[in-house]
Length: 445
Ligand code: ATP
Image (cartoon, rainbow, N blue to C red; front, side, top):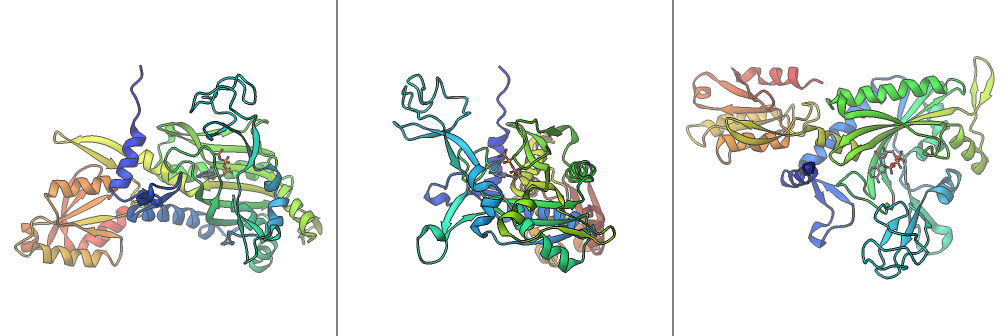
């Protein structure tokens, strides 16, 4: 038998122990597939989102940012096809009330027929035939609970971009080709969630919609899929753990002409964390039709009018965070002692450095505090004077902190400190007043 891969278990436990990710409402027994980010997790995810935003919105002239509301006019979801089409076929067990996706491999026999056997209670003939179940969360807006006031929690951020496309175009004076980027929450009432933060009911997306002239869409699609692969590799993710998966005709969404997933080899197998889609003029045409508002673009050079095609890059911020955690997790041995390390890219690490007085006497804590106060003006750093120095190093290894700065006896005499590198374990001694510059050189990414 192949050895059981329990990396996910270890990762979940480390995430809790070190304050990356907690189960939502844990003291009440948790809420299914909803997770909270703790002190280190919120920093890691924020750093990822910032990198994404910087690389698309700040470093390019042809992409603008947007932050659209989660609640939108209900007609948006009719136009987008989500009301009628955003569904999964599901099967209920009439006996034990469990619910399954129709493609659940554990189901035996044919659901809806006497042969269908429930994988949970084991009864035969208790499974319903597959029924379509909409994944959108509904809520009610305003004080009156009537059908007219039903609104949805958005299941993707993209539609907020499409309905604002003319506003952004006109206010920013962009010309096609140009893009709009947005980071925000999305909600899907997933039926088979699981694998930690991989598939959750509330999650964040980082989406960019690039508007192009029809006929140039293929070229831009190729450009963006390679660009997105380059971006994730730039965060230090091992290239051999990344691959493209092109959607087959059967897999393509109703709006897409071509689509690639970028997949990562998680401990539970190859899975998508970002999709690049050629959405054609589907969305804008539908919004033009449903809203009655013209959404055409006028090319002032050629006097042509057309509805732009859209090339979308859609990444999950939570899944990308999980990719980075899974890729960074490793166990090794230092001087005969096992340690767990998160080898996160220094630019993404929640804490950039930790400051330690070697012992809590002889003026070392006071000096260490001074170093800490100086550094925290520049970076998110941590002060730790609890336990042996070895234990303090190991706690930071687990947190993914790239540098450990120790104030020792020699510091008192010549103001030098030691800096320990998380990955090479090498220690260098340098003047305390050179620390900021030393870290800056290494944290630039
Ligand atoms: P899947 O096939 O895994 O359900 P999808 O193809 O429906 O995903 P898209 O609609 O293309 O996903 O969404 C784009 C990205 O949003 C995904 O690559 C993923 O990173 C993220 N995402 C989608 N659904 C979830 C979810 N339930 N939990 C966490 N992230 C999600």
